[in-house]
Amino acid sequence: MRVVEFTHGKGIEGLRHVERVAREPGAGEVRVAVRAVSLNYRDLMGVKGIYPQAVPHPVIAASDCAGEVTAVGAGVTAFKPGDRVANTFFHGWDDGPVSLAKVSESFGGNVDGVLTEELVLPQSRLAGLPAQMDFVQGATLTCAGVTAWNAIVEFAQLKPGARVLLLGTGGVSIWGLQIARAAGMEAIVTSSSDAKLERARALGATGLVNYRKTPEWQHEVLKLSGGEGVDLAIEVGGQGTLSRSVASTCVGGRVAIIGGVSGFGADPEFSPMSLIIGAKRMEGLFVGSRAMLQDLSRFVGANRIEPVVDRVFGFEQVQDAYRHLESGNHFGKVAIRVGA
Image 1 (tube, helix red, strand yellow):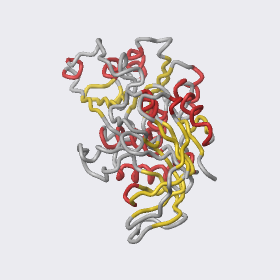
Image 2 (cartoon, helix red, strand yellow):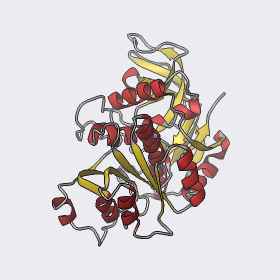
Image 3 (cartoon, helix red, strand yellow):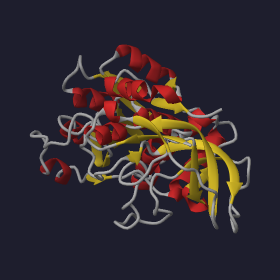
């Protein structure tokens, strides 16, 4: 079978197609024909050598896929051939609170990922897809979808009527917008592009802020939220945005730190006092568990959410897909089609 390998720090040019030996599923295992893979900013961090879970040898790239079950091993009860599935992000986090052991191995990080024609995994590493989703859409659930779900539902425990701030229009932010709106919440979206903001409006965004035109965008967020601030800010920027996200939240609000597209250096404008005087809570989130993936899948199915996929590349165009993600021109997810 063909797979795409990368070596941490070798760059996009280091991505390469190689042959590996396929195997039959053992007891408790499921064989999946991979149909689609979606990319995350974390995949760029890996090829650039700045992802913390790094190993010196080549690993199969990417963490998120969807596909069709083609065979099951002895004792498998959760799936049968023909079932449509997505994979979990971690090898060991099924449910419950996060722990070091549960997140020690992640697909496409320090162990082989999913950018391959075929996977053999334990049945506990898979969840069923919503009936209305195609494989490309289903491949967006694993990381971006679960991360947004974790922030809104698990961490902030928001209810209808709450306000959510989403930075930019990448995968997690657009997933957050769609989840929030389906759950009856208001969503404020920032972007440097008016065209992207209009697309966010079409998806139900209730507030739009162009941060290039309004550098001190936290003031505009406060204005859009009636002077109170949002209940949750999903912080994907990092350096230069953290202090503004905190300032944008209400008294007792939450800030979920899930990425650092602008870098992970210190934000010189951030002061812990801004958390104390606002009784605010800030927490780092590392994707989520299989239980969250299952809950998200059911929610998406019940609300008939269609994830936004910016562009789909072919299996031979992997480097082009990574470069498109790197450009920052995408709106929603970037995907790769694999197999039939």
